[in-house]
Image (cartoon, rainbow, N blue to C red):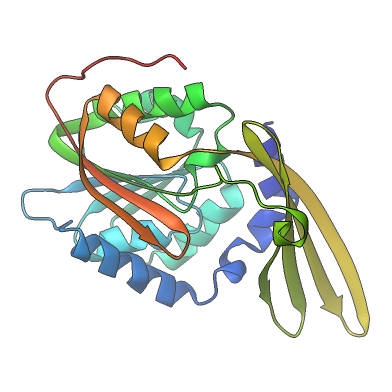
Length: 251
């Protein structure tokens, strides 16, 4: 089991949806983003959500009329998505998105990989391969949407401590430990039962991806960039598939 998968299984999956606040508001937020970017079902029918979590993007896409396949490593989060999707045309599928070509064999109109999923991959080479796989899976002129947090600029001292969310019974903070190519994210979650507080802790490594590097890799994989937008500390990229890639990067 990878370090990321272990972190989610042992700690984060149980608190994943909670740490984002209202589930319904997150779905509306993503549906609004997709509409803002011109993602409609006019001529488009199928969507693939890579690293879907509990389903913010999957449900938003389904509500826009797409038939969605939602892939994630965490069975717990997929079960939550299955419970929330109702009659929507969403198929949850447990699997590693690095093996997406073995999981999905039909062309897809729209592929999303959002919520800072890309930096969860183990290496930049994995990111490059995934972009190539997305290009291969997309139908002609298909579109992909990516989002990630730019961790290329190092934070120091107390700026490395980030309050995530808290309520009467749960407090979540994370601490960032910077390395040359990655950041070790230490998640600290206090939960209260009665008068007793208990600390739950775990860590995992995220890649430090820079916007300029990712844009270049998308172009090398055969994409044209349509939208490049920053929102609340996250970068969002929307691109469409070109017929031929310009080249393949190996670093």
